[in-house]
Length: 419
Image (tube, rainbow, N blue to C red; front, side):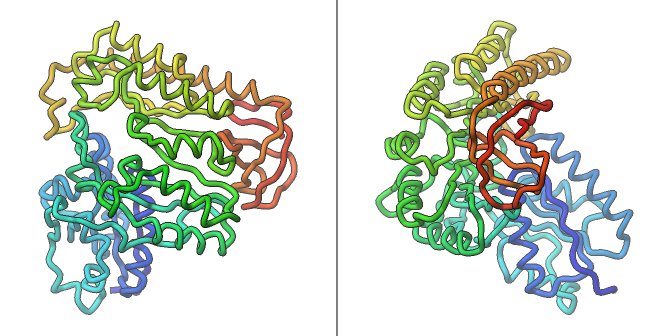
């Protein structure tokens, strides 16, 4: 076997990308060679199909490599991948973060490695073992503070891939952010599967707002802190306090809303109603007038009528949402929603297109409002950076990558601001 560095192919969410970086480090430390590692996503049936397609292509291009499949789809449907001729080893989500797993994949041991290593994810009780420093670009680092989910939304398979919610202790998080700051990062993003459940399994049951306040207090030189997708119904008083009083907490929140109709929200087993979402956005915007919102919204959930869909469409304006992630519903085997009466495919596609158009109109409205304003822009490349609200800004001349520059917005180019 040739001595070749392992190849990683990542699918799905930001957390998967984070964990792929951690696995690269584990594989390198263990001396793994001539291997292909596919980190799969299980969020939709389409995600699993794409993973299988990727595996086949990678095998064709690398016929002598060991193909290792891991991630959420490997956890939830290991037999799907063990049945593929192209796959040599299947690892669960717990096993992929265990240094011992990777030591067993070193060249001198790989012939003795169990081909299927997928244990019960629900028995896992900690998530701190694979923290890494500095995943991301030169300007922005991502810190995983939580994994898993205790909720059981009827459309979602993810708890069965990630396990129950578990949190990284605040002291560990603060220490990591201090190291990242020392390495020159000017922005840190807190990530997790169900971020607003952070702390429920820790002594004293602290809340996400407590963690945010602690980070901002104990890392006073950190210029910018972001939080990724949150469940607005679980936001605590301290997080609202941070929104109101902490300029270093960026005014951009991505909300897991999923729908705008109360009956559909109940059928999804969500924990909020339509008015809860509107009330949260109104309150946060009063506390921080420059606040912008992204949101996940599903189009065509089972039993959704035209009138129910119109409630989601109206929510875009009522919550003043800007950055939409629109998901056309597709049934996920093993979930209750897959057994509900389904909406026909063309209607789902049409509704998703209307939602995306509404979101695009909101983006243009937001960008137009920025012309003439001055922003602190974090540079991701010499020519492009992002505002506090996460809008892209392009510059005519080179700027220092990774630094925060003051810029006046002069115009718009498509979905980007000009400075």
